[in-house]
Amino acid sequence: MGIFRQGCIRVLCCAAIAVYGQTGLGAAPQDPGDPPAPSLSRIKQRLNKPAATRLAPKEPVQLRPTFRTHVTGRPWVPTLEEHLRETFTLTDFQRQYAAYAGRCCGLDLGALVGTIDRALAERRERKIREEVARELAFVEASRPPVKDDR
Image (cartoon, rainbow, N blue to C red):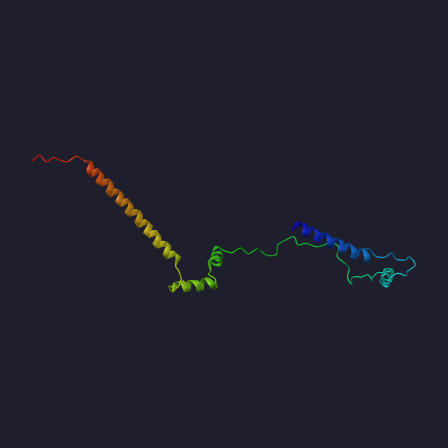
């Protein structure tokens, strides 16, 4: 397969050389006595024309810029209340979701996390009670029996 592919590539290269060899790769040299192309003469004419008219301002141009050296107003600094209101005011989407979740159609993550926390706390408490009960039973079992001297 590789030899066949190499042969095809060689044949195509030879055909390309034959086609381009007949038509020629470069342009034929021009005779120096030929008149210049029309576009070249137009370019020369336009280069010989004077430049466009100069624009002159109606008023004298101020060469030195002027800068203000004082502040005309004081910067606006929001109060804490304005900042908190801007930060925590609900958007329309947040209000819509709050109404949706309030109708028990959404998932209230706060209630879900609270339920999980309570279940984990109850489990820890139950495990501690069971461990205390086992240790108390072990202590009771290792105590010598009490003799009644009556």
